[in-house]
Image 1: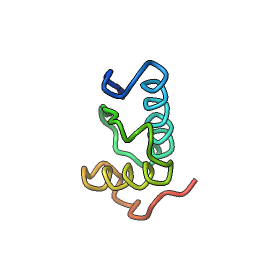
Image 2: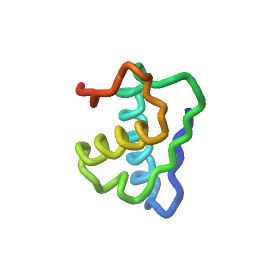
Image 3: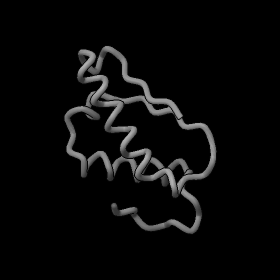
Image 4: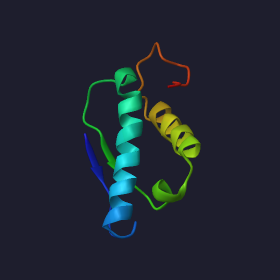
Length: 78
């Protein structure tokens, strides 16, 4: 797995925050994902959007890319 944030996101603090937020979402969903290599590129909204919005977008992205295990069709709640 890899997480990246370009300088377009902002200074080092903003880039690290974006990567931390993506990493937290990945760990939340990781038990329900197929094995593979995952690379996440953060966008500007990663820093400013609410956690609920990021969670919904992350869930949607995983379903579209068909990386969620087949028996997990429901949204994961922590």
